[in-house]
Length: 384
Ligand code: NZQ
Ligand code: ZN
Image (cartoon, rainbow, N blue to C red; front, side, top):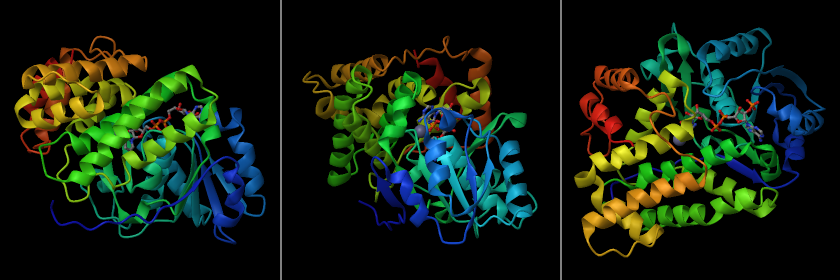
């Protein structure tokens, strides 16, 4: 295990009825900008709960943050923050609304010429407005991390940044808010969580026993709970369990002291930038191609996952590896995700564009740093 520092300041406020606690969690006297997406919060009652809890505050609202939040939309919110002297941001919605709000928080305080540099040039975030969230979609783990992923359709870019300054001050997770999720978003969230764990676990053996076992526990729990949410969508405990899994999938606990992969995400983000495919689905598409291409590099951990999570008993290593890939695809299919290039419009032009985008950046992806643009093209050919 490598040396590490661990940082996570997020206060989690979990459970039914917790949105009312906003009244005491938001700093007294703050002028609040609430941010939201395309309107789900109006249909499921979350907006009303937030409005009631913030009755004692001066509140400005900013809606219309898209799935895969767009830079141009977010910059409109930055303008409002500046002209209306906002001093606290509250994201209400899914990971896109929260990620967008993290960017608004950083861009509003950015002193360089172009806030896009935070994403494109990793310009340091020296300061950011304080932010918090009421998260309504179990998927990204954004509610307990310092990452945000922002898109720019003008240039077909989708880029991430990390800063210690944009961790939420608190995150309210009320699992009942997820009852209104369409099955497609439920499936996307489970696939996203699964792949977050995979990016941290399916690397090369690193003798990080606890982190391995934590990852396996998360995957086992996910595989156990996933069918229940489709069979019993109104079961509170199933929703609660899935949300807590999503939060823990990307809050930093699984990867302390280890080298991670994140190549599936890097390729998935480019696919979304090119085709608009949902984030979770892009990952379900890329994963089999990644594992088929990286049999040598990732084989030991793939088989370990197969044996410990899917219970694969096949003694032959190569066969066990294939069976693990098949079991993972079957798991995605059980969620209703039948990921094929054709279904998602990933044709030859898209494959080449994605490979070029990553190649031109000079990226060497993966825990081994062996995945360049050419390799990305090869991986995409092996996806289905
Ligand atoms: O926009 P509204 O109307 O709110 O509807 C949303 C949206 O259409 C809807 N939704 C959310 N909560 C709902 C609901 N509908 C009914 N009931 C509810 N309770 O779901 C749709 C998708 O929402 P979105 O926020 O886009 O989904 P998700 O949370 O999966 O976020 C995806 C984004 O997060 C990024 C992705 O790349 C993508 O841009 N990621 C962020 C990460 C992070 N910050 O750590 C890591 C991830 O790997 C990921 O890259
Ligand atoms: Zn993800």
